[in-house]
Amino acid sequence: MSLDIAVVDQPPDRVFQMLWAPLVRFNEEQAGNAKAETFAILLSEPASDKVVGGLWGRSLWGSMYIDVVFLPAHLRRNGIGSMIMRRAEAEAIRRGCHGIWLDTYAFQGVRPFYERLGFVVFGVIEGPSPVFPHFFLRKDL
Image 1 (tube, rainbow, N blue to C red):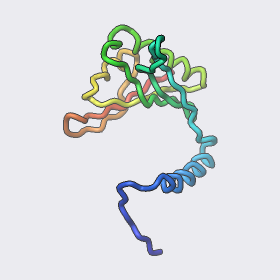
Image 2 (spheres, rainbow, N blue to C red; image 1 turned 135 degrees about the horizontal axis):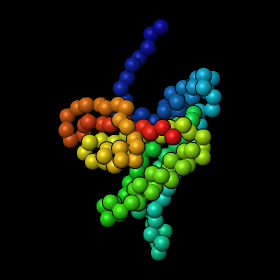
Image 3 (tube, one colour; image 1 turned 45 degrees about the vertical axis):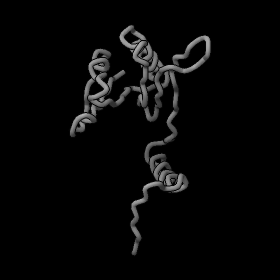
Image 4 (cartoon, one colour; image 1 turned 120 degrees about the vertical axis):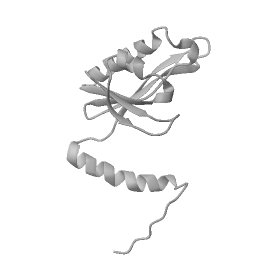
């Protein structure tokens, strides 16, 4: 079989779906429904309803992945981060998840925060500063 191979800087969105759809079909044949269920914990200013921080995650196949945790500097170090992480864990348990995982970079400085919450490093990608190392952490529920 002869194939052309091309590296494309800005591929059209439709091409992603051409790759994604058969992968999802395969995954579902092997492991069941492959649709992740998303959720968010949002922090907003009462006067304006402007979202100023929070958490975004998704659950799939008995595991929850935390995509984003963000608090502006003035809301850090006062228990809000711990509170939203506990709420995410409660949501994971409610969804029947047996574990929760996330990733962070060294320059973000939050690895100790997650470790205080009971997360453990299960993988590291090493590399040059300032971006690396990149830590992967998990917590059994």
